[in-house]
Length: 92
Figure 1 (cartoon, rainbow, N blue to C red):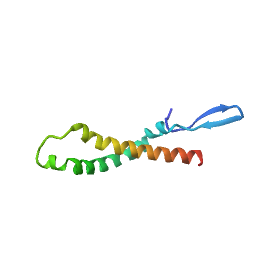
Figure 2 (tube, helix red, strand yellow):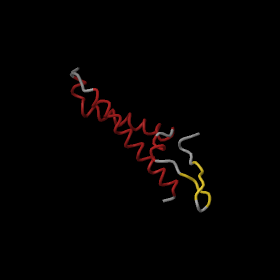
Figure 3 (tube, rainbow, N blue to C red):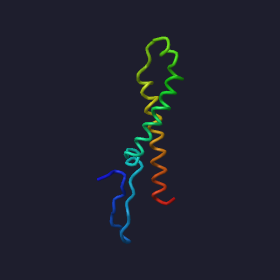
């Protein structure tokens, strides 16, 4: 069963479709792949801005900060795309 496909459910007033949650859409293959590409580009730029001097002078960097420079753009991009998709499917 695909996480991004709506699942049919019976409603009290007839049959309707249950739309996937934003969280499920965030990790659908299409949205996650696009978010990974955005995170790679944005994370690289952020790391150069935030840690560029440490990289060029061969000083240690905080790996947590380096990782978060990739994780945050992934989360923002995937959430934004998933929310947009959920609104589109809902019709609003």
